Structure formats: structure tokens, C-alpha cells
Length: 119
Image (cartoon, helix red, strand yellow):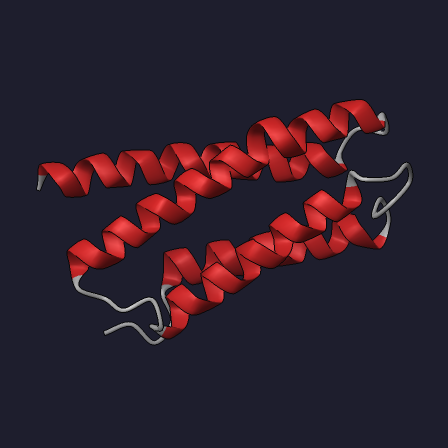
């Protein structure tokens, strides 16, 4: 149970970093600030989130092909790519990118918390 608790803690820290970085990357108008949010917070948070999630899935004996896990992985990966794309040039992604990022974020959180189709 100690491994499970440690992985849950790492996943929560990763989630906090990833979510703060993703929203910070589309929040301010200054490109340098948005880049810092994306690369210093979202990217490391994403790594922690995925590594801890992989460990939790392994501990629980669930394959990564479980539908809710696959949805969460796909939407979080697409969102991270959107964040990286959005901070590469001035003015990129500030309109529809924000809306799409929020939608992907919401879908990822929905999949991770409600676990549709899980038994």
C-alpha cells in the first residue's frame, strides 16, 4: 500500500503542475511568461502525471488500453502538444487554442475521475 500512496501523491503533484502550466500557457498575453508556464510547469507535470499513472495502472493490474486510460492519455498528450504549439509564436492559439485547451483538459479530468466503462 505504501507504493500505491506514493504513486498517488506523485500523480497529484504532477496533475497540479500540469494543470497550472497548461492554464498559465494560455492565460497571460506576454509570450515569455506563457513559455515559462508551458516549459517549467506543464511539461514536468505531464511527465510526473504519466509516470505515476503508468505505475498506478501497473499496480492495479489494468492495461493502458483500458478505454478511460487511453482517453486520458490521448487527450492529455494532444493538450500538451497544443500548449507547446501555442507558445512558439506570438498570438498563436490565444483564441480558439484557449477554448480547445480547456475542452481537452476537461475531457482528461473527466476520464481520470469518472473512469467511464470501468468495472
